[in-house]
Image (cartoon, rainbow, N blue to C red):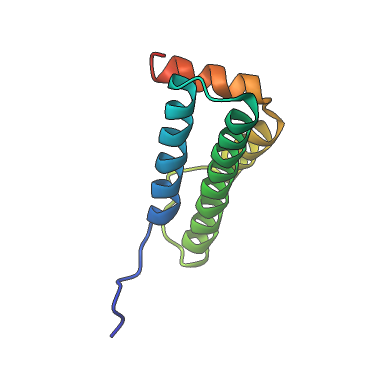
Amino acid sequence: MPIYPPRSEPVKKQEELTKREMELVFAIRKNVATDKLIKAVDKYRQAQLSMLKAKVHTFKENEYQKKPNNVKLEKLEELTIEWTDKTNDEIINEVKKSNNL
């Protein structure tokens, strides 16, 4: 019997994304140097892309097991392209807006 039960959602990736978002929020609030802010933005972008990749994997796994999916694969692919193409300033402005900074 496994120590950890299998998960149906990418919990670790969600935790990582939340952590990276908080790091970016703190970096914006503290007005850190530009290079450190860019690193925080890149880590946040990578966490977002990693989360989307995990969701695609979950979608394909559910499809293989003939379980219902509540997300469309096309939407996940669109979000992946969108996050890949976003500039650093767009991400910073989006985080500022969502966290009322």
